[in-house]
Image (cartoon, rainbow, N blue to C red; front, side, top):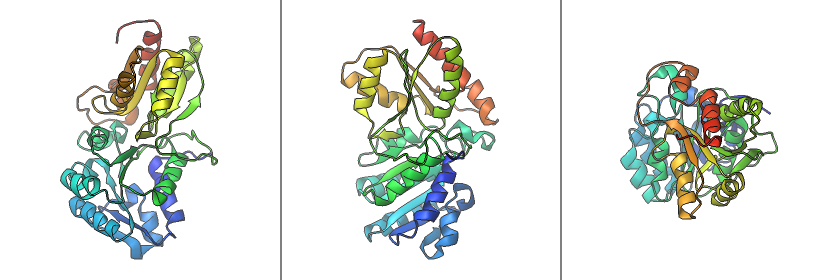
Length: 313
């Protein structure tokens, strides 16, 4: 099991699997930070540094995809999507092109880079686009395996990656499956559906909850679209209470995706959502921001206790 940032797993996978000559990688001038440089150093003839020109990068990736290439377009999430919505919507999603959009440095976990770099609306952007799958690995290994999957997967995908190092959740035997969630730990009192680095925060929260006699089930929903409806329904019915955890605005993110599944199937259980409460944050460390804006393991544990005690949100 490997501790590390999900961006590191992405870079390692590109470097190891880039022998497939159909794979091309594009970056918008931040390849060292996104880790796509690992591919560029090994396969320079199939690596394109587009500079600070994200719209051109996305359209070039779409053009390469029409020639049969598997095109990875990589940048910080705030730039990759914040500057390219028309190109992504038309040239990637509408055109159903085989482009893999990879946004790193997402969420409040970017910390000191400040609020303009803390992309907290990208899941909402991409989840609403037809044809576009949305995934967010929880650790280094899952990011590695998800990248391996994307090389062979036909169709447009947005993969959301983080800057911060996280502890390993999955071992080397793990296989990523689009549309499937993964039960990290079985429990009985409530189910926590988490994604990305919030899986780690949830695991820490569970250590605190154990002292209060609570044993939650923890589910990693790395495939946000398509989402694992069967697993969500099964765990909601089994545990009777639902808590979602994400480093993203509560509007349009994982929490809403889970609520849509429950609503569509007339499942009536208490639900609470951990996420950014529809406001911008400020500059600070990841831990400081998570604590101030309600995303930390302390807040997850407190919300879970209140949920089990029947207290209002």
